[in-house]
Length: 261
Image 1 (spheres, rainbow, N blue to C red):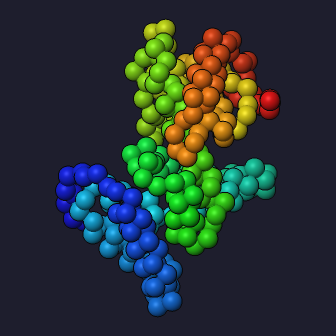
Image 2 (image 1 turned 30 degrees about the vertical axis):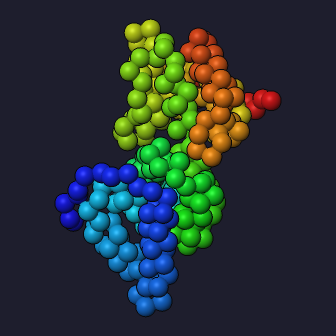
Image 3 (image 1 turned 180 degrees about the vertical axis):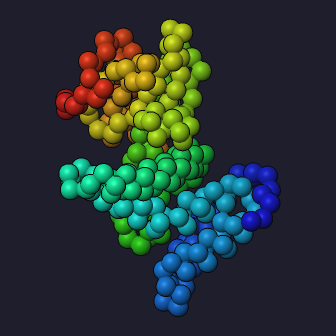
């Protein structure tokens, strides 16, 4: 791998050109080498061979789309097997280990996608990003939609929470914390509080996890215009967060959400 050179601000033209170059190379090499080798060659050229930090991160996002889409499919399969009741102890341990390994890889990719959206979302539209990830993943459109929707929900909730003075030292969760269900970590009234962004319309939930307060905050789809939070979305999310902060704990570790209007 080449040594990375300093950051510079990328333009829409550069991002679009790189996405199209990656997709074109995969398409060109696939008939000759097969998909797996085509993806490896593309990664070597545009990720390992890219010295500029931000362009390399964006290239990784696009070049890894197919593998990540397949990881999501494998996660879904493993989850079904784990809940089927048909596995003996040995196979449950084996499938569970495989599931957690893949979940970590998917989480790392989610952090990468979220970072690219936060840094460069002003330079491409949601439709453009969806198209790039769909074509790079060889047509797995539902995966692309789901990945972007989840990442945008976190970006929007982060924007809203950053404006709440009662939350101190708010930050995104690390990969390890995210794997435990914490998108954000901060302090409220001198005690640690964690939060998870949920997509859709749900009542805010507050519960106790691992000895601290944990909130689940709904991020409605209309809270964003492209990748930016709307005024209505900002007000709604801050209201939901405050409502959850001041609510009593639910008695169970995880309660079912109820849709509301």
